[in-house]
Image (cartoon, rainbow, N blue to C red; front, side):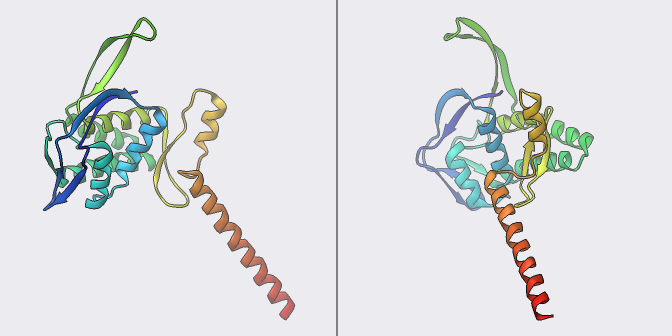
Length: 214
């Protein structure tokens, strides 16, 4: 998993003339490593932004600028470029074009600041541990996408059409069940099943009414 030091403006961000502006200087937080599921959701939320300025601003309010060198403002063009690039990688993987996905991933990551890696002391275990620390948020996103693509599949939700990861897990049964996932969330699965149930009920009622009239 990838470590990162988040840097977010406490008073939030705003959009003006195609530029994302921090209302106050971003404050650097501690270096942390997020759980896989949480990190995965951040990546998928980023892909789902669709370059919408309001959505980008709301996302930045939680996670900050994409690039570390951005101190007070950042172009929305940069956001649109990275959103599209990561989405294209996931779409290619979803369509089974794995070679294309890997080529696009290599191009996308090559323009990022990258990460620093090395062994650091682990106080709680009195031992050393290996850490890969992203140098900025954009690098973290690309590294997390690469991490999630290893041994996993990209699928499209049957209900809402959103992209999501499936497969993986520590045990074979969990891996098998997750590879069969058809929905991005439990909510989408419930909505789909309810809709299908309603359609079937209406269809049966129509048959009964037709039979009675005959």
